[in-house]
Length: 175
Image 1: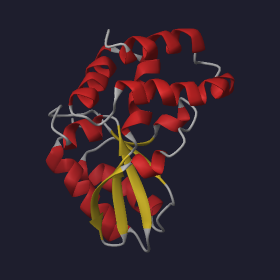
Image 2: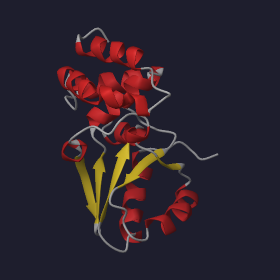
Image 3: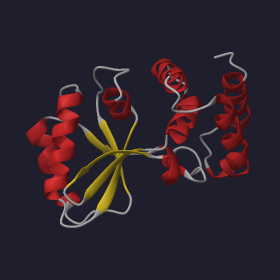
Image 4: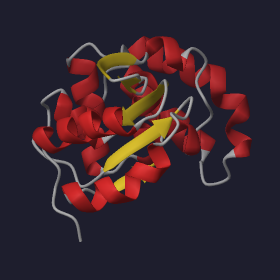
């Protein structure tokens, strides 16, 4: 079992990934990593990444870095749980450039909607933190939900009616 991950470990991982890449690419951090880097959480249990485009050499480095830094690393992003939001790359915030590697926070609208769909206690806190910090707007979440709602049938684990009710409640300021 890996230790919890703090901001120092995430920064070490980003630097190590930059050194390990053999060319340009992008890595999007999502979930707890974003929460820790932006200081609304002190720790996370894992580092969720999306590679797009995949930097050469990264997969060769991931297993070793996981052990070396005692970090649980997962390839996971909101687009595995809900439809890909239009414009997500443009809304992703740049964190740092390490070597030829650009690191970003995965689009906070996508993160907020994926967390709203799952809606665990920590997810609710995270969505509230994103709204409070101005990373997403309530009306923006509703608009983007409406844009992807017809694609929800491709995600059988999602209950569109319940998901929609949650998003509308957030948009109305009820959550």
